[in-house]
Length: 157
Image 1 (spheres, rainbow, N blue to C red):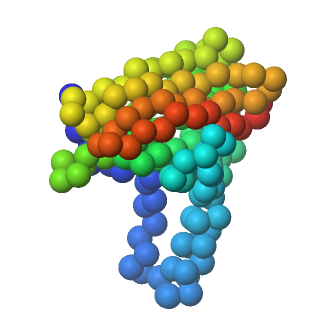
Image 2 (image 1 turned 30 degrees about the vertical axis):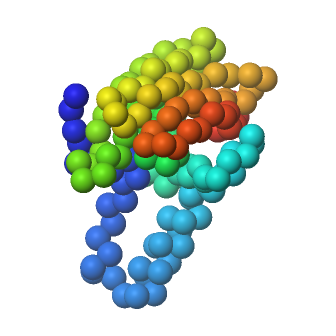
């Protein structure tokens, strides 16, 4: 398995060259693009979703969402021109860092499912499906004593 030094929630603005007011405005803008979602089935955790408005290519046919659930980070890319959906999964392991644990691409109309696994740390699956014009992210995994099993609406097409 490969490791990556790049966090799924990238933000590349060099804040050291700005005044405190500009830094605060940048942070506010970044926080505006992060949704905090409580799981529909309940649970003592929060799902964080970074909207594609934060991406510099927001006007293109391709959109990227970044989702964080406990130590699982997902990068979801959708190309509206081709109807292709891609899903990458990372696990943030204490001390080691972010590790890519899988990726899959396919047609949004068919949906995609990805089995997850990192021995002793995480096991489960995630999937993306289209239903009635809404794209749903489903997940079921266990990691370091934590368990999550739910489905959330991600975006509409």
